Image (tube, rainbow, N blue to C red; front, side, top):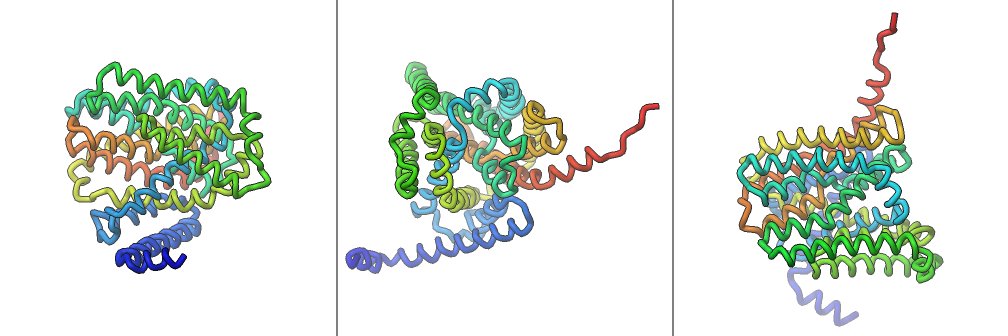
Length: 402
């Protein structure tokens, strides 16, 4: 202990780091309480805070330090891990079958606008595939956060929405390797191997989850919650690390770890990990704002707004069709569309892959940054007002047939 104290005292940057990080957490906590008071999600508040204190604002947080970026990455991993813990492999297969039509509509309605937009802007195949992925994939993290904030977990539309998210997350498994091949110019053979490995891993995990879930549960002792916390979170982080070495999506790897666990073990893990998820998720969302340079956005703001309006509408179409399988309520259908409207962590990952490529101009980053900010802010706000609009629609005067 004495050695650690001397090491901390000898590092003059450490007190400043503690002050900076602690102040950021203090601000995020106040914003979370403000959002709770107004009964809306805190995600837009986190994003705006990141913008204000990041590159385009006061620039008071040192983004070259590894603490906040590392915690932000852990936040994405934890968000997807908790999503995986919600469902079993059997439920994934059943809901995928039930929502296959909605999933197909989701892909066609939301990938196509981005792909056409990228082609129209002259970014070729790489821009079309990348931007199509950005507009297709909803933010599992924001959806999970909004469902929690607004206490919608038991609403009828929540399960179909999560089914759509699961389908999207599984699509990302082969999509990300394909995009990497296109952006980096990797050979066709190597690209096919990456895609094949991704599909095989997903299939194996689902099969194990369905047929051997009981065997996996025997490896854990639910009466040792601290042990469960450490083992489950450690397994997810380790899986994400291994995934990075083989060009597999780390968040998807964490999701698959969660998928392997069901029953009492999953419930214990959820309860123990939930507070940590809240902390790291807040850091993830504010970190995205910190890394967005506002000076680059105005040049592509109009295209970003147009694309956001168009694809928010197509997500409402997806949500409407998905919720229709379980309810006839207009309120539920509108809530489903609002939940799916936000884009977030996967869109950021896609933008990061594109940033390493020489095939796409800086305008691509500016467009994606503006688009994600608009949809990530609009989604939670639309969710807040979806019930009011749905109630008004259901209560409107109707003509009485003569």
